[in-house]
Length: 326
Image (tube, rainbow, N blue to C red; front, side):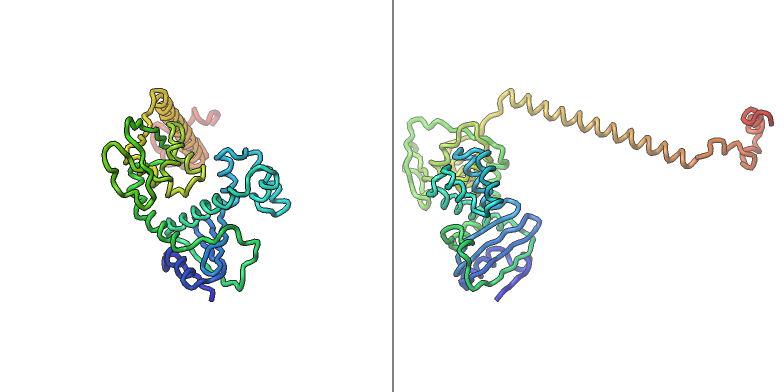
């Protein structure tokens, strides 16, 4: 049975859980000012997804570019072919011999998860679920994703995001590694990460944190790391937060040159705003002048004979000068 409504009535986790528990097969769409997202379900599992304006295949292609697997020119060529043939971008890139087909499923899954998690931030919008008897093979985009794990991650993200943002308030922040000295690294599982290190001479790290540390070089911004598509945005922020608290990285100090550039940018902005204000003042002055001219369209109106001002002696004395020959 199809159902629809607004996100004021039901939240995203509730809707996803309902489809999952009832093992529904069909298409679930979300629509709001944020965009348009479509989830394809089969027996309560997500097997396909797309989004507008950031389409899934475009996201995947951009990840390959950011990871320097392909160039931007190669991606644009693949997208041009897709428009003509209707093939998937991944299939085209594999056919062109540019990527290994083994890397596509994982990248697809990460980007698909990222799209679903983005829904958890939607406060307003509409949803619509259409039941299908079966799903066409062409709509199967990746290995089925269980909804329960997504819901848990989404709820956890909402709880932890405010705390993470205190440490990483901007995507433009650059982190640089901190020298560990004689400390040893102990590799632990994601579930054991809360355990304290045995002593001050060792540091517990998860596999995710180790992978992220490779990209902490004092040059990459947080945005750069996210766009590499190594993990979902939330997972990257969370693990950067953990690395910062473990003392393995620090925010890069602004150099003197950066401060000079920022100061110049502020000054340029102030000059630009001042010029805009000056032009606006000039326009208002011209407009007021035009209005006054229209109001007193006849400049000699005060000196016309029927005007009450002519009763004044001064105006009577001036009249012969204004109207010579009279």
